[in-house]
Image (cartoon, rainbow, N blue to C red):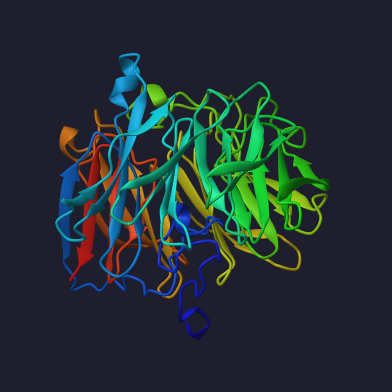
Length: 439
């Protein structure tokens, strides 16, 4: 274990220096906290749960020690034909009670969006077609109405400090926007070759965009304060999945030092249901896609479960320290791990779990090898209506369970958990926030 003595040691330089200053812990979406130890669950530990009901929760971030922020929104207005709003709260880290709360942050067309803590200490919120800047007391400093009447799918912060965002769309012409964090103005807008459903990912000053058929990347030009598309790097993952005609778009890419990892068959009907179980629309299985950072002609497409109707709506997890890849098929309740050979790029199966309902973003502690995730099964057939979803902490090397307990969420968790500051974490079901502590 000496090679894995710590979690991620450095925060991307555009972000505030905290263990979890943005969704997935960083723009590379490694889902790994910075500079805090893992849960290190022991057989003698007991779990303590403190919960709070929400309309719709989205994500939790950490700032300075003891500073915890929650993003949630009033999605139910959408069903009545009204615009939706988001809210940011600074909450008590133990009781979850709000200490400070933003005003209604206008959004417009709905998608969960996201927020991040900039290196300047302020909070930037993307929701609907608006971007808002808040101070640490949740007071709104400035707002920017974004150009297209579409929901914008969160944002990333580059090492330059500039923000990049784009709308979520399955068809039509869309733009990638570069935004000045100080003036909250659009510095540059560039037409994308195709629309994108996925959230953005970034490393340094390079942005990766999973379009509806291909993955692309853009580089920030420091002198001109513009984004430039890398025309020598792209992979059409739909055309290359010839063994599975009918594949649909991919979701959020994960960036390691050598490769980009993401999953396809992202189209589903779960927005009409309590979970993603059996909600895939393609007849084919879903895949995990790898493409080399240095050469997009170096790629592989690997089936996950091999079961028809496979689908997801979130990223896989890649642990570079242990060279372990974890991917899943939410529609068919399946999760699998492989060992990745860096020299050959071959994947060797490590373990798999059938009938395991994972759909959301994970939380991975590299020093202890603990993966925090969820197992959701049908409310109609599984342990009555009470439990709905269970939190499960897996050993990433073996797939064995270190802990399992009911969360009493009725809706499957699709959104963003966060670590706490010491042997704890925050889990967001769509309808509930829970603080989990091991003692």
